[in-house]
Length: 371
Ligand SMILES: Cc1cc2nc3c(=O)[nH]c(=O)nc-3n(C[C@H](O)[C@H](O)[C@H](O)COP(=O)(O)OP(=O)(O)OC[C@H]3O[C@@H](n4cnc5c(N)ncnc54)[C@H](O)[C@@H]3O)c2cc1C
Image 1 (cartoon, helix red, strand yellow):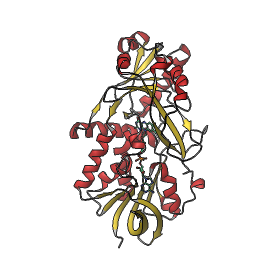
Image 2 (tube, rainbow, N blue to C red):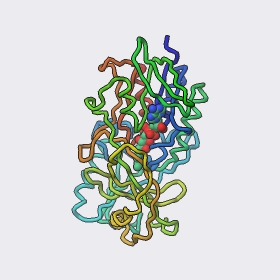
Image 3 (cartoon, helix red, strand yellow):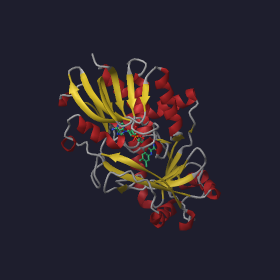
Image 4 (cartoon, rainbow, N blue to C red):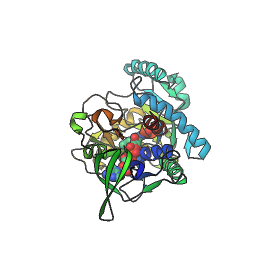
């Protein structure tokens, strides 16, 4: 008989959401987090947007879990007073050549379950008088949320069901044993181990490392994680009223494009850009030398913004399974029975819309355990 029922590696928004979903039915349950607090990595460094589900390929996990997660999130926010705002979003075409892409987005989003409204240039200007536009789309179901508010809710749900979130606890070993796994951890300089029937790998930027500990050839499996930084620049408070909602350009093949993000405190920032990192260091400094390139992207939408209006703000790192230039890949959420590792569920490449999708991901993982 294993010591614990479920071990979740990683106390980010996804690990905590899964723990909150499973804790009522699976005991003992542990979330193991290497940092002194939960949610200090990617889950604390993102746009905090409740995505509608517009951009993802039809029937992908990203599309399905985003649309489902979005509705679940609005429900959770309403019933548990999690700070959020259904602020909506405009996608603006800034030149006539982009209008065909608006039509493609409209069709794809509608098929995904993320209905959009077509807007003429006049209608866009009525909503957003300062932006450049030849026409656009309105996404009424896009919102913003406090990521920490959501994680606090998940955390308190986990604790209320008697499950543990073990902080400063680093998973360093994972071995298959009959009926489960031996999990080796390091805490306060001490190494110890225990057995667990289920292990759920929600280790974000280290999800490939954890899969590798279990003996998976991560390169062959396509689990290798490429660190892809996204930086933001902020505008001063005096320019906050340049937009009333989130404003995005028409996306390119590899990025949504630098867009206007408002947070719940009313701050207006632009980002994130796309920068594949040469190594796996968690370097969150925003390079001030990017200001001119940012300003140029921002002026596509807001022509009055000058270089000097922008100041370096925050950054986050996306855990991508695709290398630079490769086609976009879906979330990997796999119960590893076919690799001879029943009881191990890997979540790899949990980039955007992972925050939005978190409650739906939790339900999906719970379904794998119940199957
Ligand atoms: C720039 C940017 C913008 C984004 N914007 C949005 C957005 O607007 N909306 C949206 O829906 N999504 C967005 N996302 C995506 C979203 O932030 C992520 O999908 C989500 O936070 C991933 O959560 P996670 O729990 O998988 O990862 P993390 O938050 O990284 O959590 C993983 C945890 O595992 C822990 N860990 C790692 N290794 C070990 C180990 N060996 N032992 C113990 N613990 C370990 C880490 O310390 C970490 O806390 C954005 C992401 C980025 C980078």
